[in-house]
Length: 137
Image (tube, rainbow, N blue to C red; front, side, top):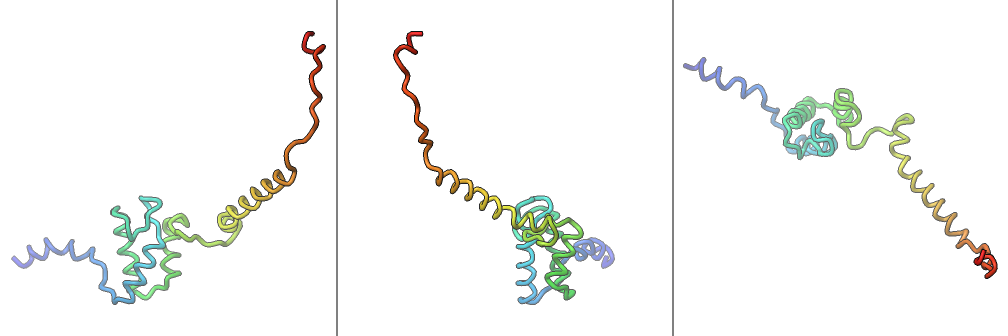
């Protein structure tokens, strides 16, 4: 009888995340807000109801309980799912600089164009009036 009960509850016990202290849980929650759900795209795993987000939350808790640093946790997820999974991707290399600097460059270029057009003022080129002879053609 004990073997039957154990066989029924053993699969449920395998999927349980480790028990964390309050400090570790707060750290894990901060990390979960920084990691994007692989299925929901623009939702952090802390708020997603998707099954994969639950697995990702469990993995964060396991890594935190094992003593992994925040950077190690982020790196693990970025390696596994790509930089897309991080809400704050690294700014290294040309892709990172373009990602972080691109919007500011567009803002500067747009501001320069607006300033250039505003500085020129309205077009004041004189228009020759139409003579009456030209209208009766």
